[in-house]
Image (tube, rainbow, N blue to C red; front, side, top):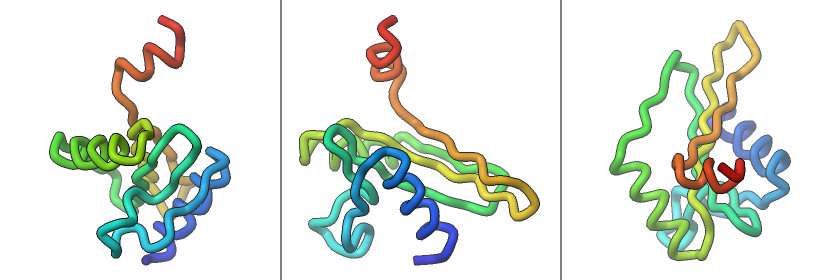
Length: 102
């Protein structure tokens, strides 16, 4: 795992009061990167100025989260070397509406 991804996973686990998934990405049985009581989080970090979330990737995360009885969440870090990283959380609109009581 590269340094930026490792720091990102640690930061997300701490922020969400979750646990890093041991062997995530390298073991068929280790889904997601961080797990909490209610979410399975897939972490993606890049030094690029953008990151694309496609439907295939989102469906994979959703399937993995459903398998372990958690909500799917994607955490994206855009890490510009000259600035503080931008951390984003991706969830569905339906989930956002539930969380904000709308």
